Image (cartoon, rainbow, N blue to C red; front, side, top):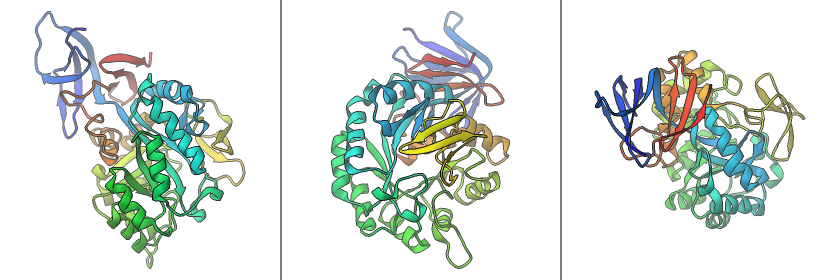
Length: 386
């Protein structure tokens, strides 16, 4: 493989856009420099009229293309799901587990920890545990029978099975022992997220002071804000230097509420995520989320019993388009919220989420309307929309 150059109208760098010119792809599949001109005999991928953005990073995704992480099926996660996510613009992701028994979660850790390097599509950069240390009142589409107080010993067992790949774990900060748990976990380098919680503002503050730095799908599954008790939502707004996950499908959170959150946190503290379940990329119909029957129709996934939202079927590339179309983010801001910011939030921005010399050349090609044209991994085209 020789050095190749990409020609395009616009390149989305972390904090600026470079117009025109050429982006170098090195022989070993890394990003090189951006240059104004190249020699006439250079190998050029001509994407004139198109934009080049870093591959998207989904740090909260339960499944896709019929696969659910809770099935703990190796080929499903490292091949089917990983491959299919390329069509959504995602080149790096954190397979996300739900509340379950210690043993089931340990087994998921073991499967991913032993096989994540075998991913044939989007790269598995770590694991996210959305549970089991939640409060029953805001259980969402999760099994309250497994919800319990946090245990650092359980975390250690999972992390050992995961070979260090458990990068993010969520907890409700009002649970007994949560402050001690959070402080011990963050000392190991794993990020702690707060969510599925009935915590007061003060309880949320104590969790953040202990080291928690992420809010699980802001607004959803948390005590709301009132004029006398700011609750979890108020904490999301007010506590600085923390990252709010946000599902921008228009169903989980209405556009104006997304706008208010972004104004409170700033674009650089909001990470777009999908919370996608196995029905992503699949036809409407009946599905399972973990052990719960779900009906997918009208752009939503809802529990058959009760009708609560049960994850999403959002594609991250569409989340980007939504926030731009809603007028609450520029193209540059939207791209950053779905690539660099989620990567920073879980500490993998040294591997992905940006165009930078020396980084793996994982990128996407977009048209001026931000429709996905192609996805590249290590400088090689792995998905084409046409």
